[in-house]
Length: 346
Ligand SMILES: [Zn+2]
Ligand SMILES: [Zn+2]
Image (cartoon, rainbow, N blue to C red):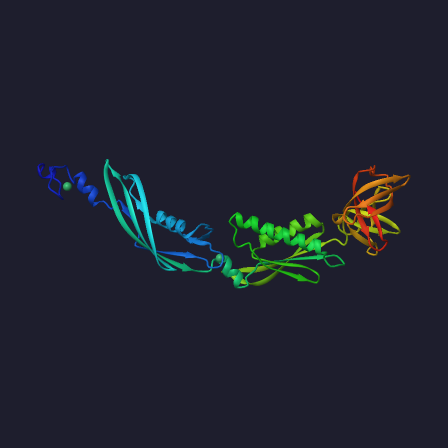
């Protein structure tokens, strides 16, 4: 009995059990499945990996390399592993790969040729199929009190929304998409894929423009016995905006802060700050964000001459006590079209 155990059962050479050479030959130390189905979204080119969709940016060669590398199973006994891949595209969705794996086991060189077929399959990812199916979970409805939104407000709200969508997508939240942006009643509706995105856009809009948020759920059905709601995030931004320049009873003032009833104003002739009751009949002139730059060309007692940097023309206006307007200083001015005059705003 003891003598029999001293020979390799495969080749008969003296060995205690299977000899090292036979063990190397019999071990499938590099294996790969013969065929892999590789699924990607034809719309956004995300790829499906273990059931979830992930971004892949790279060319077809790096794609094939990464598919082969992740499908290869190489025994940890192998050292100095080298993998070389040659691929041939049979068609746009079928690629054949010849893979040569080399290495050493117990300093003995080994090599293993393998074959793999990759079948490329298109499938809409969850995000794209939700978008194309018209799925959404909420609407951010931005309205301005007693007026339409200005173009500047609309542009800014859209910019904020797209930026938040991008931040969430980069963090892996792909279902937080903007499905649609509509202009409704001279204002903006943003249709969103998740309530989280809707909430963040609504809050950021209020952060920027002031106002208040109310949410209105609407039952749309149920899933697994749990009621499903679609949420409307109703954002109401104030009638006046920070930076609006208005005429109040013959005085020009800049709106510094605003809530539903009172407005804090900065009077542009005297430079005092005070609170007044909001009235919608104030004449709107412009917003300080649209101010032009002018250079003080000369001063004459209470008058300063300003060169409009856009037109090159010189305008005369009264000095203001709250701003240094020495010759050569750069100041910001707004043009009052109705009065055909310039207003110093900073
Ligand atoms: Zn043997
Ligand atoms: Zn997609």
